[in-house]
Image 1 (cartoon, rainbow, N blue to C red):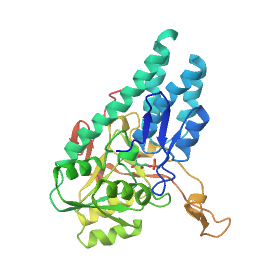
Image 2 (image 1 turned 90 degrees about the vertical axis):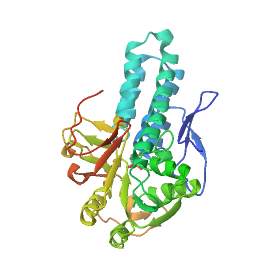
Image 3 (image 1 turned 45 degrees about the vertical axis):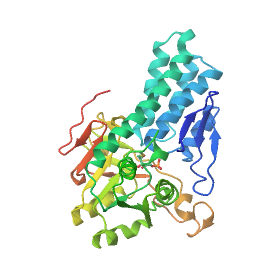
Image 4 (image 1 turned 135 degrees about the horizontal axis):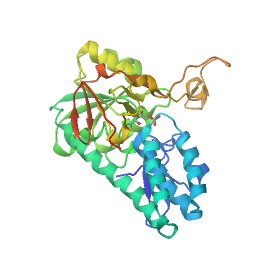
Length: 334
Ligand code: MRU
């Protein structure tokens, strides 16, 4: 299976360039701070856990060129600004920063490598645990709707929202996965539909504005989405469009599940109003995947990358600790 982010045997950092998928499956090497930041900003590497893993390995790669602690910490600060909403980025960099601050110069390089590998491996184990818990909510023949991409491309291994579906495939449970295309950047069409089709799942792609009619037709039994940041009260930031699905799910009485590692929990933020939402370039809305203009010149554009689903629309949050039901009260664990 492909890896979204990997350290090669000869110690190079490669990402699968997600801006090229599904037409081209190609890796790209990240060698310096600017290429790492560019890759995160442009979504060559994306999905909350994957950007944390890339940043962790990236810190190690930077230290191989220049292991001066002060300069490394300054670069970490720049990388942290690359995308503001997914808390996994600052979580992973905080772990790398602690290693820099607590390790002697002679031991720093192996210690940074070990920490990045640990972050990567822990994420893989977390995906497995989420897969097991999420699987227990599935029944044979279900229609499962998902939004954006919270699959293997967004994590170390199986993903979060898609992890239970990978397990269902392994165990022979039948299901249909419905993938919202996820405008404006089409992560559902380009990435989730590709991933699920490759895995052999019965996969159906739809435009975002078709989800309501699919639910009205009785074809959706549950919704699984990922998360970029979950506040102490359970309010959840995820890809723009998630909130609309949660509102629809309540209307149609469809269970709405959020799957995320506990590194996505942000107990320091009391509720969703404190979550910074990334605003992205107007071209993403005005141009069809940057290739063909389809809106008037100079038009004002609304293009937030994420929205916040209030906790009371969420049936359960599934982490590596199990299936958590409301009311949610996340305390500081880090
Ligand atoms: O802008 P993106 O593609 O990075 O947004 C990704 C999402 O919103 C995912 O659902 C989230 O990061 C969870 S990935 C396991």
